[in-house]
Structures are given as structure tokens and as C-alpha cells.
Length: 130
Image (tube, rainbow, N blue to C red; front, top):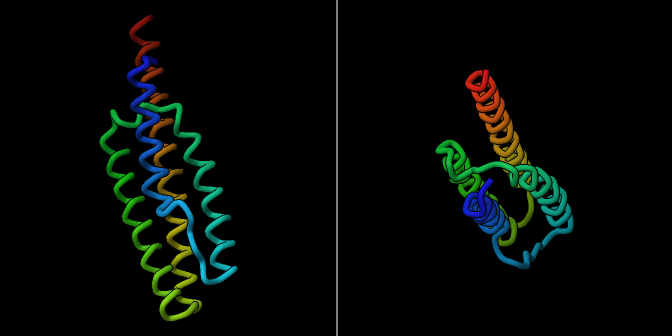
């Protein structure tokens, strides 16, 4: 993989991390919410690190999924603001958990699609060589 492709991948990954993490220091009014965020953020970053081996910018579906991730993060920020202004309730917490799980599901779907593309590329290359 060329240097330009590596730089493109890193910029894409950094873009997802920056857009998903929000402010550098998150302030939580509730310990449970802070723990949820820490737990799901660590899972998210683990999944995200696996994507560094792919050239994501060359896939339109990867850009579309990145937009989905950004929208989910905006929803979570709105939930945090509601919890701060109105107090925690089980519906908001459940909605946040669903959002965190949706972000993970999107990353896993992206990885699955990229593995299929890579496998398809490898198969077509082996056929061309033969």
C-alpha cells in the first residue's frame, strides 16, 4: 500500500474518532452514564482500530456509514443534554445504549463488507494470474 493510501486511511480513521468523541473532556452528571460511555467508547475504539488496514476512502459505502456514525453521535449528545437538563430516566439511558450498540453494529457491518471486498479482490487477482 502506498504512502498516500496510508495517509488517506489514517485521516479517515481520525475523522471518525474526532467526530465520534465530541468534546475532549466529557462531563457527565451521572456515574452510570459515565461508565456506559467509557465501556462503549472502548469497544468502539477497538472495532475502529481494526479498520486501519483498509483503504476506506475508496468505498462509497464507508463514507455513508461514517455519516451514519456522526448522526448517531449527535443523538447521543442530545440525550446527554436532556439528562443534564431534565435528569436521568430509564428511557434516555436505554436510548443511549441503543445508540452505542448501533455504532458498534455499523462498524462491524463495515468490517464485514470490507472483508468481502478484500476477499473478492484476492479471488479475482488469483484468477487473473492463473
